[in-house]
Structures are given as C-alpha cells and as structure tokens.
Length: 468
Image (cartoon, rainbow, N blue to C red; front, side, top):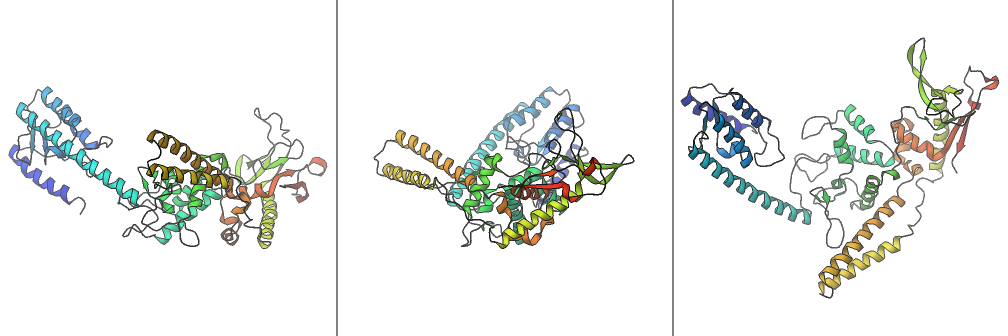
C-alpha cells in the first residue's frame, strides 16, 4: 500500500510521455521530502546530472512541487534548461505552464515553488507547535517505532523487547561495555523494527540512554521539565519502575550521571580479552602481567598464558615470569565466587546505603525555587532578578542531583544481584566479571616456581591480595 501512489503516478506519467514519443526512465525518491533542507534525494541529484550530460531529453513530473519545494533546487534545473543547446522538455500532469524551457514557464514554476515552500513552512511550524504542546502534557505524538514497545500499540510494552532493553541498561550500569551489548544483540539476531537491519553500535547506545525507558517525555532530544522542576511523564508504560509501579527516576539520574561523568562508570578503558590481564602481577618485579596466546611449533593454540613482558614501553618489567592463563582464571574464579556466595548468604548484598550528606542542601534549593516562583506569581520580584536567580538555583539543583546520582551509584560488589547468583559466573560479560573481581581483590601475585623452572601448574604460586 505504501507505494500505491508512486505506482499510480508512474502509470499517469507513461501516458503523458506518449505525446512526446520518447522512452521513459523513472527516477524515484519515495518518502523523501523535497522541502526539508537536510534530506538528500539521490534520484533528484541523478536526474539533474543525467539531464546535464544529455542522457535525457527532459523531465516529466506529476506536479512542480513533487519536483522541487526549495527555490534553490528549482534554480539548479532552470540553469540546465537555460544553458542547454538542445530543446529540453519539461511537463507536468497538472496541466499548468511550468515549461522550464520558456520564460513564462520559468516564471510560473518559480511562483508556485515559492508558494509550496511557504505552505510547507507554515505546516511545519504548526506541527512543531502542536508537538511542543503535546510534549509539555506528556502526550505521545507518534514517530518511528520505539524498540521495547508493541508495534500495534506503542504505549504498551512488548514483554520480550522490553526485557532485552532492561537487561542492556542493567548490564551497562553493572559494567558491561556498549560494544559487548551490541555484539550480544547482533548474535541474537535483534533487528531495528524501523529498518529491518541489525542495530548499530550508536543505535544500542541511544536505546540505553533513552529517557523514554523511564517514562520521561522528550522533545527535540531533551527531557521535558514542568514548572516545578519535575520530569514530564509520558502516557506510555515505563520499562523501569519502582515496587509501587511508578517510574524509577532515581535510576534514570544515576544512568545520566554515568553518561555525563564516564569516569564514575565501572568499565574497562579498553577491550580486554583475558579475565585477569593487568590484575595479575609478577612476583619478581611487581609489574602487571597480560594474557597472550600460546604458540606451539609456530601455530597459535586456543590456550593462553599470563606473562610479564619487558618492552620499550615497560622497561621496568623483568620479563621472566609466566603462568597458565586458564588455570589461574579457574582458581581465582572459584575463590571470588565463593566470596560472592558467602556474602549473599550473610545478606550483605545489597548493602545498606549510607545517607547522602547533601540531601538537606538539595531540599533547601528545592524550597528556594518554590518560594521564588511564588514571589514571581505574586509580582513581588522583577523579571531580570527572577530569571537570574531561577537559572542559578536550577543549575545548582541539577548539579546536586548529579552528585547524588554519582554518590549513590551502585558499587561493584552490589552488582551481585539475585539474578546474577541464579545465572552464575558464566552468565555475565568478561568486563562485569572483572568489576566483581576488582571489588574482592586488589591484585593476584604470581610467584616464581620452586627452582625457577616451569612444569606442572602449582596453585601455591598464586597469591590473591584481598581488597579491604
């Protein structure tokens, strides 16, 4: 049904072409606006190029506004018609004189394109004003399908997709890299419902930080705030809610704090392939050891080892220590997981949160904003003073909320949830495993083997250094 109009136009243009006794070549930019300046119409560019090269004898179009709604686009075509040494055809189904090969036709075309452009601007302005008003009221105004909600009712959650979004956000906040989540989605065959193609890395990132997940209304990429400084909530179901069913705004603000202050996020700065790279340390020189594949007879094997590597960038490393990667990983995983299970049995997960020391200051700023607005309503404060004071107070409130989000951000050990205990160690990404290991251990020392020789793996060489 989507291309029915285009197919009908093709049929009509074929009939129109019969009077010129020429074969027809179709150029089509379906669903691409001729009005919006930032839209690239590939076939529009192609038809002008072919016309200029002499491949075409002219242009037939349903109407002048289907061809151009920006005067600059029309002028590109007019330049070709005026400069051509051949007589080029320009005709429309409208029956009006828009023949670009004549002065009268060019005048009519310029007039009608300007009228069409003005009409589009008026329509665009009305739509923007209407959408802005809806945004302030939290009303959903349509647009592309939001992943996580039902296609046939975009206010209701799709259980499967919503769960995937929830898992992605929780994973990111627990330490997963966006690239890890992206790869998981790709391997699972998750596709963007608007394109039918797999999500891009940027698309996954957008979904993770999307205010809509928390029920917050956005407009022009900004979360909407009401007169009292609260988020405007949308009229759709929220993915993240509190126990009472209300949107989890605290979690949203913690997530935003991670976005604006990435140094607070418990994520690796670079991709790490081996679990304990740079966590294990050489027992001779104390330098961090990294995982490297094991080569046998010039061929790389599936195994790996942790080695102390002396290079130009690390001359302080002794380069004399190595240990079996899989055996060290297995030993430390068992040790840390035992700590995790013991902590869960002692109900130390999650730990009690300490009260935030600036909660009183935030409440005081909220009260000042409220009092200032009351004075404004009573006309007891000048506009200049009101705007200046309000901007300062709202800026301080935003800063305090960000500080609170960072301060109350879930520590690494508290990423160990009942869901994690059920899934087990292998149910989480390597970066999240490293977050948990770092929360339990400061380092893992690999001591030299007895006699300084290699051989059978000796667990006694591995010394965990526990975090306080």
